[in-house]
Image (cartoon, rainbow, N blue to C red; front, side, top):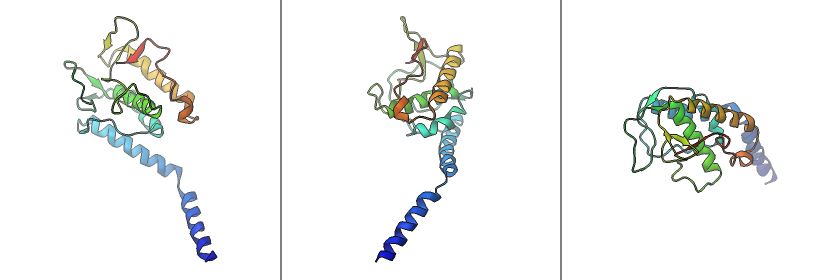
Length: 175
């Protein structure tokens, strides 16, 4: 009986220690690449954002400067949709990263994984102007602060920095 328990424990330990971190990263990258490909080809069917975790953020950050136009993306059931906006992939990726941050903090400020009603930022001061043009220089600032936010925190546990709003020291917030 002891031999069987010993063998079982040995197999469990071998299984645990044989998991390769690179294999896990490949799986995460494939999930992100699939999401990006669906967005780029306007074939994303779900109304909801993917259930990504903070482990997906490095793979997502690769795409924050991508200016591909996207017409079909997760948008929930918001009653208002702006007329003919041009959505850029990089901004949708930042919005997805913000969703990951919000979900990890169990924030009550979002619904159904969405960090805001739309993937637009607005000025943080009155009048609260939406910046619907994803080519606006404001999005360059936002890309930079999200990259720095991740770079400054990537070696920490998500619970240590999920409440740090990357846009806190800017004039912007998600709409």
